[in-house]
Amino acid sequence: MADSLPEGIELTALDEAFRRDPYKILKRLREVAPVYGDDQLTRVICTRHDDVKNLLRDKDFFTDPRKANPGTFHREFLARGDDEPTMLMMDEPDHRRLRSLVTKPFTPAAVESWRPRIRSVIQRILGEIKTSEFDLIEHYAGPIPAVVIAEMLGIDPQMHAQFKHWSSLAVKVSFNPFASEKELQQGQEAVASLDTFFLAEIESRRKSPGGDLISDMIRAEEAGEKLTAEEIVGQCNLLLIAGNVTTSDLIGNSIKALLDNPLQLAKLRQSPELINNTVEEVLRFDSPVTNSGRIANRDFELDGCPIIKGQSLMTSLAAANRDPAVYPDPDKFDIEREDTHHQSFGGGRHLCLGAHLARLEAQEAILALLEKYPNLAHSDKGYEYAAVPTFRGLSYFWVSS
Ligand code: HEM
Image (cartoon, rainbow, N blue to C red; front, side, top):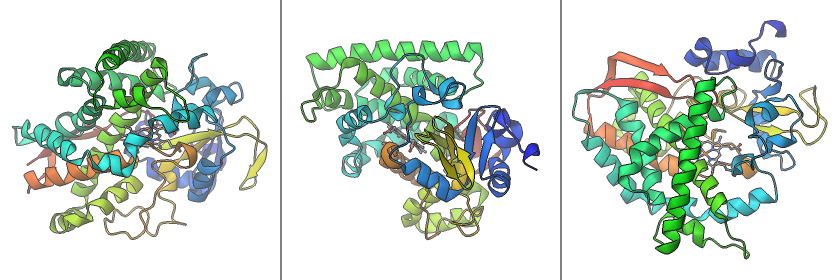
């Protein structure tokens, strides 16, 4: 039976069937082989909610790909040669040090203080939409997070479009084992351009600091530790890569789920106070990040399957979020669901740093759009999911007002 299960590329958004409906394929995997050896990409895929939850929170597991066994998914596709990994792929104690130095601007209270500025960014972007039919991704969901993070970093507004472009190119290759030579080259060039740009920004902030995140990082001092210029550049890149496409996808996936489910949309229009629960339900129902991972630090057994030290473990967030053992009627999108807890921001030490920011942007973006367009609907021009492994979002999504 397990022989006929999909593997490798068939379990990524590069495959058309998976892109169209990953949940159907992941359901089968969870039912037939919840701990599944994907031999093509040399990784073990875990699809049960409780396994995913526990693996992500195991303090002893690694995320530094250099610690994975040779030939495994982590070692082959996530390591960047001898380069230092980003925080996401860093282990203790380096991870703790770096995270503690950048965590302040992302606490719920700090993010909340940005709400008025985020609202005004959203209104500005909304005001630029002049046609009755438009691509929601290109004209709305795409620009919002890029402009917000650029404003938080104190970047000149004239650079915002360039930013979005660079970060999209970098994301396209960062978790993609099948990236073409051309995509790899474009991704590397984009990262190099961002590095040069940020180094210049740091220099200028050292001379005249402001109230932005780059100045905060220069000032950050925790237990006598400081961030080096290279670490600040790495952190800026990570914020762009981790925060842009994901948040755009959350906004796009939210509007799609609502338009696909008119009763839920009507409920939200009638009771906008359901917005927070709506965003949590979208995160559960159609997570912008489909998987995360860990590296086993020891030999052990998971649901009767042997896992060896150094093995690449892929935690399927998308599968965990639809596990019927935890969520009644998991394929139903229900903005009044009582328990919307989900695995979409990962967990444990690497729990998404930008979770509060992403939530706030999505809440504000959805409400502002619905308020401006009381008759928002799917357009005949349709939509398409992007062929980018690890991420789930729309590459275009035409709507009419
Ligand atoms: C809906 C939007 C987002 C989703 C679904 C998402 C999801 C995730 C996931 C799954 C992880 C890995 C967690 C783990 O393995 O345990 C992560 C880590 C991270 N995310 Fe997000 N993210 C989003 C938005 C953002 C934003 C807006 C930012 C910042 C501006 C951000 C910054 C980060 C950082 C820095 C990490 C690494 C944290 C660490 O290693 O300690 N993310 N995110």
